[in-house]
Image (cartoon, rainbow, N blue to C red; front, side, top):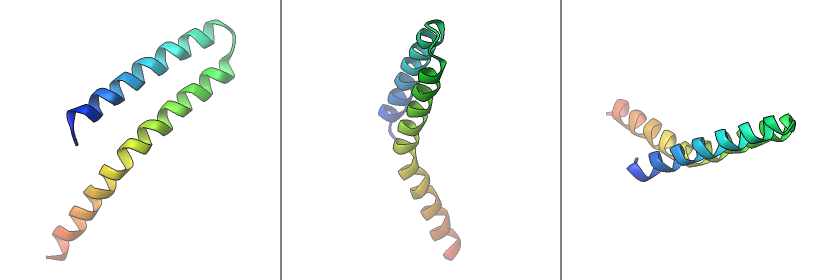
Length: 64
């Protein structure tokens, strides 16, 4: 995992939180929920390959 991924996750978190606050104060709570859901899915899309690699490494470790 690179430091670049951590910065991207932080940037998405800040952007999503600002957008959610703006949308909630505008009375558009449904769009705020969808924005937070989209941010979560984007971060999961980035993180899942690393989780898969971790499980593969653990599996290979215990097969020795």
